[in-house]
Image 1 (tube, one colour):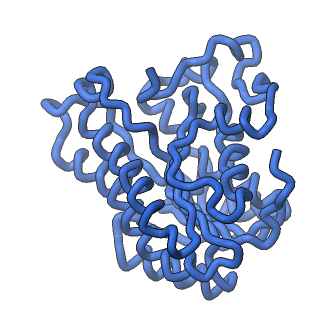
Image 2 (cartoon, rainbow, N blue to C red):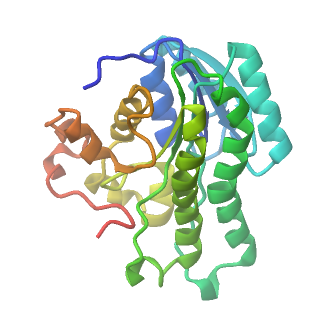
Length: 278
């Protein structure tokens, strides 16, 4: 594993009030990073745990500094204001994690236009809006900035298109932006990558589409956090323009034991593969 650390690095994470975003925030905070928790969850939800404020407290308890910002990634003005506030507060931005997401696994025939718009606004459009707004600050990052998009490999197998083309389009759009921005931003010493889990991850989003029964065959969000950390500590654009899988990257960096990541260790060898992976 890479021995570099994230001490004092400034990391802006969208959708960071729960799930994978929260796990990334806490992992980076444990190395002394400054974390911007950017999400809509300003008040407690009746059925979902976590707000930007509860995660901010966890970040500080873990050893990092926190800034909780209520942000709707669909609103360009809010995003721009949040980036400025974050940069003013911490002195810049080194890493942007585009983690906020919306999901509806429904076919074109039954997907309301409103839901189609929501997925594309929160998934692919938000990557564009947030990355563009963060760019002036990432350009100034000492040692080079990073953008990480949580999006999958581009798999054109019909089985990923026919059942839920609207969702697939919104996620593939994120990955296409990864590839394009990686090339475009090379001149600014900014690395851009996508990260996707090899298995399903036990989050509220998973429960909303697959029920809690899938948890037993899923991994904890911490595997994505550990993989993200490895990306952030990779220097000098040695890793950019890649669509990475969490397990593959961690194996490449020397990890061999993945049992602790399993929600049910007895099912560690019988996990459910995530979407878009054949």
